[in-house]
Amino acid sequence: MRPRIIAILLFLFIGLTACNLPSANNPATQPPAANIETIAAQTIAAQQTILAGTSQPTITPAPITVLPPATTPPAPTDTAAPGAPTSTPIPIATNTPAAPCNRAGFVTDVTVPDDSQFRPGDTFVKTWRLKNTGTCTWNTNYTLVFSEGDKMGDTVEIPLNTTVAPNQTVDLSVSLTAPNDLGTYQGDWLLRDDKGVTFGIGEQANKAFWVRIKVTLPGGMTFDFLAQASSATWEYDTGSETGSLTYDGAESDPHGAVGIKSGLTLEDGRTTGTVLLTIPPQNNDGVVSGTYPAYQVYRGDRLKGLLAFQAESDGSCGPGKAVFIIRYKDTGDGTVHTLGQWEHTCDGKPVKIDLSLDDLAGKEVRFILLLDADGSPSGDRGVWSSLRVER
Image (cartoon, rainbow, N blue to C red; front, side):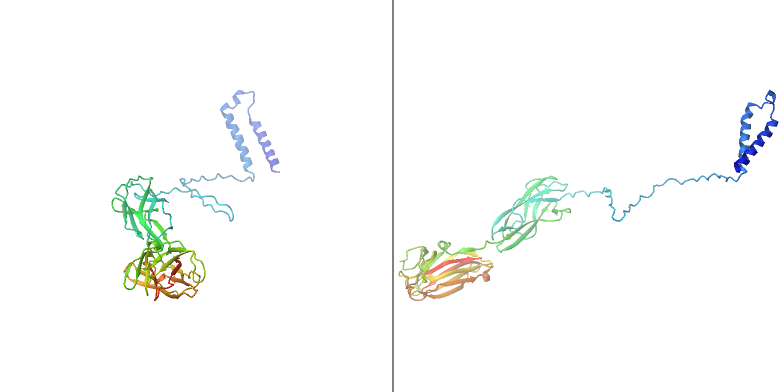
């Protein structure tokens, strides 16, 4: 209905207006050209007024809001859904601390890597390859110095014999001696600058570099009395006379005889390999003895061997009767002690010996072998078979 009412009202308005308009043939009654736009505007305004009379809503212009100056919004926080892949954060640059003036970097062990094995008393040269990772040049007033641990010798400092600029490498060496006792040993070393300040390796230049060795001896035989017999000092004692005995001399010597033999027949009928044969002086209670070169004793050492008489030429046991004695001389204080003695008669049963030397561990000793005729020397052809120190 609303459009129809509007149309009727417009028709009536136009009709009334037409009655009052001047004639088209009378120029005097024509409105000036300037008023045409005014009339058109009034017509449009009248139409709007009519339309305004209807129930159309009034449109109110929205107020203008003045925004405050723009500010930087806070950075959004990414919260990943459970199980969703997370993005890799962009790394933020940080300041790297400047390298210190003096600092070394360990490159490699040129010689003697960790846990190298040496025999007691062995000398060796340890060489490290280091890099100057500081900013100062090492000059010839810089020194390699012992820090702590096991010195393994008398050397405690060695001047550098060259200059080492930053980022250059250098080989530094020191001559050392393995300790006499078995075990693991470590000596720590540092560098000292021309102002007397020590430094080493690591980020803070406060860590030592080291030499670590193991002092050990191979297992098995460590001292062979037969192989060392020619190096021993042999003597005789008749009770009224003493003197030197020629090694590997004639068995007919009245002062006695000593030498390495093989293929002998023992009192139990066995044929020997290589053995040590000792014959005392040809008088009652005569003694023949041999003092061996020095030997360093270690825990775990055992003295082993077999003691017997050489059989008669017909294979019989014979009248042999003597005392086999093993002593040692402590090279530290010169005292002589007896390790063991065995009174033996030719009964076809050689004597097996097996002595622990643990009580002598750490001592340097000279072993002494003795054969005492203990009366008549008849048949006293004493055999020391496979006599050795074994570890």
